[in-house]
Image (cartoon, rainbow, N blue to C red; front, side, top):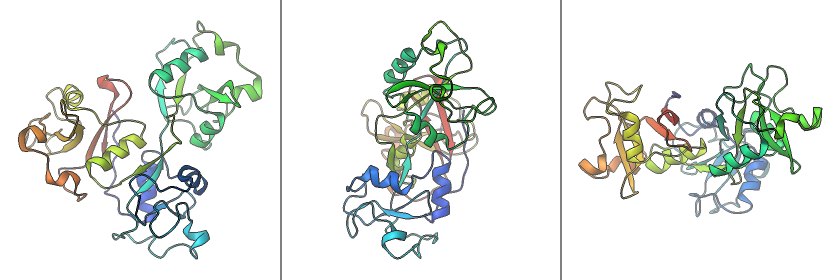
Length: 321
């Protein structure tokens, strides 16, 4: 169970940078321009919307008054005066975030054959990343859960199978086995239990996602997607709660967004136990809440439950916001 706590974000640069860093990171100028490729980001069509970047700039991701991909520093006379203003500014409606890599710790003694791990990633709708993508994700630091360990993860080096170091015990993060030692003998040996090992896999998209940082159903769903995860359906969350309040929500009134079954529509489920029993559906008992899409902060919001690529109870994460 993962718990990340932070205060409600305002829309100034530092606050949005912190918001993004809790899940992945802000993209660079070049990553945004490559991602947009002259088109407005999802949710910013027909709007004047600026998004913060890793370099401390703001890039236009809409298409109303400026061309998508325009840099405020480079093309609009410098850093904007509103960039550090925590009050609501109408042209800061969405941000872009780097879509998180999916990391899966494999059981002890698991086979580490490259082909088998590639099939495992593809079965989850993912792909093996390139060396460059791994290095960009790590940026010189070990992957989560890999600090102090010697961990190799499969990658593609100019189209050739390779293994990248994502720990930091013996080798620096981002080291290519192919470039430094040649392809490892254990890389294609499904009977060789090289342990520990973690598989990092990528989404097949361009790697960025348009996020609404407000506490709406769509906004929190986009946060889950940026984490490389998804919102659970109502039955998955009930199974996870098993009649008890979510850790961190005991003695409180907290609603978390879910996909309602059987309608597949938007819903919110109670995960606390103060005023309602855990697992209660708002749609089924009261109808869809008016606050569900208004984007206004309420004390009964603030906990997002996400699900990974399996349906196991232990694969649920709670993020306290």
